[in-house]
Length: 154
Image (cartoon, rainbow, N blue to C red):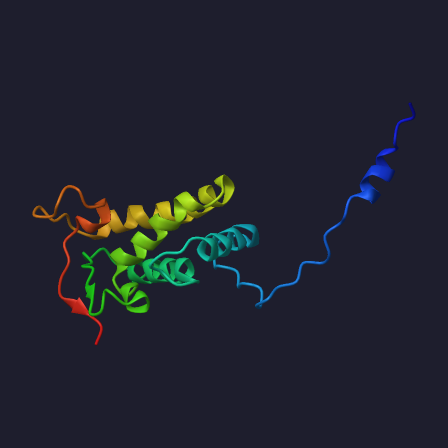
């Protein structure tokens, strides 16, 4: 019995058409590769959650901005005025870190590793610049067990 050539088998398969975006392509997240940015945008779109699309980019920017001012003075995270609103929730740096923690397990391995490499130095700086809260609940994530002060927002 004659065998089909590989080229004939490939041509018989239906090839998908060009990839058409229904919306503009997502912007690249600063400090991450294009492939990782695309994986994050896919994960945000496919996983329904509390945070809107683009929340990972906003959370990473907020986390960096909180740790950016030079100096060694302690920093105190502030609660957002309107924590139930997805847009306002990221004002609190701890909520921004929650958003980063929520997206990490939803990413493919390479993208997860790259995002973790971007977040790890920020975590170290956060630990260095914030003070531990002895009254915080032990069940809370470590970034919530740091001293905070006041409310930020309106």
